Image 1 (cartoon, rainbow, N blue to C red):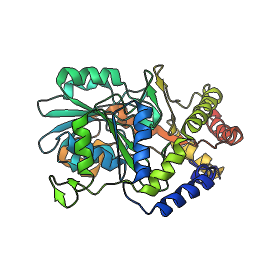
Image 2: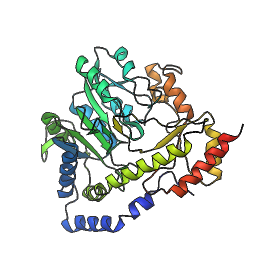
Image 3: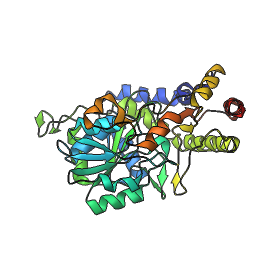
Image 4: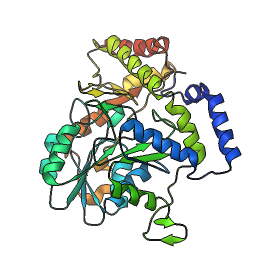
Length: 368
């Protein structure tokens, strides 16, 4: 079997360092918001060139707490994409605001800035662009709109740690950036984890308070907060992984280039498009085809794993029926959702394994 993602190989390659890092935590005896979390926050803040990094329980919490810290809630609207993982819109709904969807760019699958203006109302408070599959959204255009309309930009960078836009790492460009450290992410831990970055001092103070039950001093509570703290063990593991992340990203990019070279002439598929001002870190390598099911069936038969990201757009989810959207409202996102699928991509994939994947795709697509 060639897996879509191989976590055993990824974490196995640094197993001794991970075990030693966990042993240090056990010996220290401090397991919540200790020295490892502080070191992780300082390391990532320095890397991204931001003033603050605040570690939290997971990527979804990162989005929820950030929206809360900016005072976004009941009666507010937040513009985002209908083509992403549910957590993006879920976070908006969780704070009581309403997600307002905008169709995607047909080439990059990112939120289409040209469609944003028509959705701005006097209730709009923020835009959440998602750096989908590891490629940055068109931030310059989005920030230009946000500045004109006095809106907050919260980057959902949960799939894109290490990606850059105009030479700056994602997360550091908007008013705040949110990351997930779920195991399958480019930078992940052996469990859940998340982080928020910002250079806004007031927002950082609010976030640090919100993550510990709205408290700055133990047992004294100023706000209704959350219990969302990154464990020391996960911080220790992430510090180990941070030493490898740039090599892992280079491997992903090289593997993606191999796919591009070998599949560029296959007419029945559409390859991802990489914007010239971006470094795409290929959290997933997704291709499109009207023959998706046929290709996926052949891959499965050959012992190759593939996956659909995402099979139903957010505006068509049952939970959002009350918003009144219907099929056809966002045609680009809906077409992409019906055609897109991911093929194996991880830092320890080999060209030999890729050749097997490529051969199956070409064999299917060469059939009339």
